[in-house]
Length: 436
Ligand code: BGC
Image (cartoon, rainbow, N blue to C red):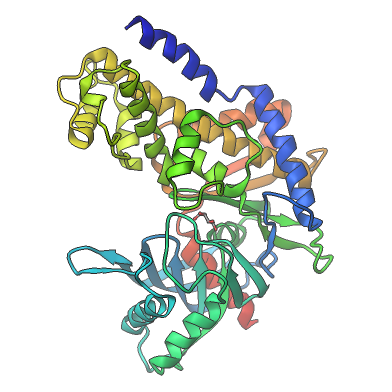
């Protein structure tokens, strides 16, 4: 166990993001924002959304698609103005179902098949007697040339569907709607989920100017006061998951090398729900290989990646014998007969990974705040959606603590809110703005 103690001293240091590092990352993030806005080389894509903030007067019934991962949601939203809305109907469906024998996220499926499947599901919800304006939240990096044109730059979140990268997602959806003669559904706007989250928050909160997703994926958008495109305020989707001016560990390298797109989405791979469980597994696996953990953790093919919920169970375990940790490692890794010291080690690995994620994300928010309000003279609301922020024990408080540490006396100017359903409601607001 002596070795394990030493190994942890090193690991704590490797995964720590002390206050000085938070400040340093914020600065580098701000530099990347400026370079990206100027069209210079940057890891931040700084993509225009063609939207500013809503005025709160957007009203009516709208259809919204929320496509951000392996599940798609279609909702019918009624907007009543000033932040009021209600969801009148909703339909969720997976893009892959082993039992039913389909997987529209695999490289065996085409973009046409994928969007036809989505159109078929819209058809179930939108009856042909009505007429619907539709907003589409498509949560992947897209180069927009207008509110309703969005060319997918690259798939993220390990999606591999053929024939979508480099294509206009608006055209693909429209073709699928046309194919089914769904003239009663008119696609009006395509937005990123971060933009949807910001729109939904700004519908009722005039100070909201940053929107972020801390869920399966990670990304942030903000209201740029002076868009290089128009000289006016515009929401910019930074695709901040691709930011990479951060020191990585050997574990991050292993994860990256085994991923679908090595070298890309480095911050996302260090912080989002899709990857935190994988990092916990990789670190534990390496500890097994080095003999720091017992035979239960020594599997030739490595330990299977944990899901976000399992990581949450690890960090939430306060039982004296760490029985929740035991359940996870036995259930997922088959590591039976673990010692309490091993279970403590696994729990601490999970905590270190989660803490790093929250503090890295906070550092990027600080970079944005310093860009839009260098002297920090007014209030700002950061609207966040996503399972990691909402459900991971301690995540929100760690993130807020990192902000407060850095902002000191001015910390009260920043409010961080959970904005649920931003992708759906935000898409409806975008369609309403397009209708105006
Ligand atoms: C995508 C972003 C998205 C984020 C959160 C990332 O993988 O590239 O466009 O906003 O996930 O869903």
